[in-house]
Image (cartoon, rainbow, N blue to C red):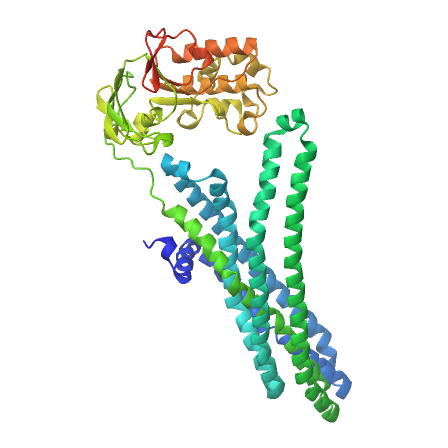
Length: 555
């Protein structure tokens, strides 16, 4: 498959068409509606001609009586065609956005840890949410232009040539003039967008800093300073926006002048001819057809200019879809491990020591022992989030590289400083992932073992209480105990504790220490930093790492 970065616009949209293929039936419903709208566009000038010629030339003609019914039937038909085409196209576009987002998210979940480390979370969220919308919207606009606007222009020009070829030629010359004006205008607007984007980033940064650091602002009296900073950024954005508005208003005025000149040149002779031979209907019909040309010409030009933006977002979408999934070269499936970890001449570089030679570490961690580290670099090698530069790690004598990721990670659990909870119920946060099938009795057992039963019972809906984003409804100690309950339910043989030392009150501190003592009992533990629950361990310094000398948590 060709790389998205090097694909042409046609190739990218051809690839996008593959996602549309399952919905060809609904798309087939949209296309006839757009074709009907395009083909009937000249009908309005035609109806005006019939009405004016009938009422002014021969008011008693029998066809004049049918004009109101024809008008109603005509607009009813266009209304039905418009409804079908808009609904069907929006439905297909909506399904396409859903499919792309789910494909991107499913791919994202399979990517290695290195990809997450190299890409900001906000950028990934924007790619999946905003870029998919822009890509699909651009493609939908292209379909609409091709299926409706091009045919509309052809039909209107054909009607104008039928009425009078001379004004029709002048109208034809109006098309490139309008396209040039729109092109220049959109060029200025896109330049303005590029200038405004960093200003919006600056405004966003001030907002995020103010929200994130509200305690410092309140304590140090920084409200006025932050308000001045935001005012400065907001004013810059306003000035840039007004520059864009000025360019847009000027282009609109220029377009009106160009259309006015063409109309004057084209319509004046037609008006004189109508005054001579009484063809008022033809004159009005020609004028309306010429005015109707403006909108589809403008839409075609704008769609062409926005194509580059659509291509840029399409590249980001398909670039994510092309990322290779996390390599799983292991073939050995293990059950519950005893927990013996042996690091044999492991070489790896810390990010802060990128220019130095990799450190080599050889040590053995017996089942139930605790290893304390100052950073997470070595710990990240155990679940194979990252690969060592040299050496190997063995679990119960088995090289980790030979184990399947699923069976390896089933033996490992992580409790991190983020105390990760999902915006779901307490029960769902305890019985998460592979343990989603756990019974209520098993969840309650884990809840009691984590010393979380008391506060969970006091929640409004108990285990079924929603915890909010990142567990915002709970205190740090409560979040930590729910995270511990999750690990206890999983019952891994290896435990990684990543800097879990929140500031707690005395009662919560005691509960958390008891929960951590239960959690670490009999498990091979890797402690990053020294959590409160690890008190009582004796450490000795080993390079940049600390290792427990006399573990107190042997089974």
